[in-house]
Length: 550
Image 1 (tube, rainbow, N blue to C red):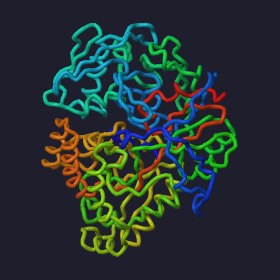
Image 2: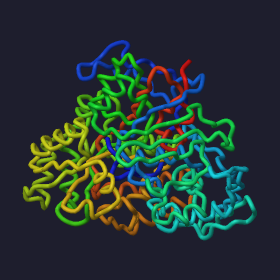
Image 3: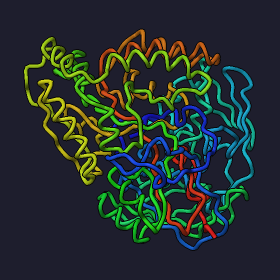
Image 4: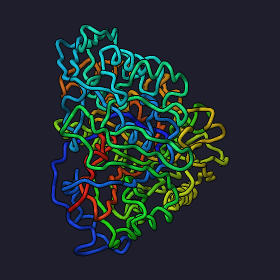
């Protein structure tokens, strides 16, 4: 799911993990040599999927949602960094990922009985109010997601969802769908209580209406503008995942300096997705430590609306060549990432098909390498006449502002006039999926992510007609045909070939100017352990594993 160094406008809900990464030993970012830009040698960093295991329980964990307060906790629409993270601690999904993106049973076992028939059998579980989780609740929850939500595109091949027993649900497809089951490990496959959701109506998933789920934590209170608190579900059906923390409080600090200080003083215990300019300060913290984890995330400029001069592929190609990605990685991200040349990040590639994707990637890397003279020539060949183009980004993070300024300066050298416009956190989140919030904006700068290791997730979110993140109204019959055939294809090698052919077509229009494939940067207070540090945290009840380090 392409989901939206803020919630990306293109929060692509898709492949959450590229190649599976085995748990390795973290080498402290503070040890050894350094470079002039960060005091850290990126070569010495070992990406890890999880910190040391927790050894005991704790009363309270205070955790910050770096992207700010969620706009909703209604599961199939909670496609932002903060919203999805909270939901996955409160609610169960039909299947699960671990920290290395390995798929297993979750609330239900599963059996792919045929290419067009998938059967789920529920474990014995209860919602927080004590009512049993039934097949009817599953049918209702998946039906809501299918009918009208951000993740509806994942249900396009679904013909029917039926209760075929008290604890059995059968999903039939009009055509084979290889990716459906893996998407049931994220917000697409969250199960809620039907009766509660129907009674709450439009307030379901809001501060006023709340939620009713069966997850390891229970929602206590959502104080708008302040915090979300949840408490341990001691009656949780899976004894292996009963949380070590009695309570968790999510805060909404979006100002980088304020967050850095709160983490360094112990006022806040931890946070995911730390902005790059917090790295140098927190590497020296005596209160906790930084972890760098594998991630499917990437930052970039996304054309914000259809039509206009930004639809000219030559202008997009000029921007591709005008930006020095390697300089941005070194000077701004302090090595916590790699230059990115396509909309698909390398960790989105399935591990068994890496060679195929690498070969396809190489030509984009060459064609989009930094070359200001080539950029100037492309501008001259385009329909662009020097008019001012608006680049919107989320306010509150000086690093993001700095990146935007660098992009503005580099584009100017090529003859492209960009004007920067900051947006408040909530407005920016909404601009990610609501076209009315992008009125007057030419480009959105931000980050996106995928929730499974399957390039089809972002592709379906971004490049099919009427998809939620298809900002440019991209319609290409051949791209659509290739992607739909890929969905029907269970053979991994053939599927990769189809996606790569489609990628050649959608990248040609330059609707996205990818910049950096970023690592997941996590800070954890030294009194705690057990944090998931890969981006798989977004598809897991990540707070359930955090407890005392002693």
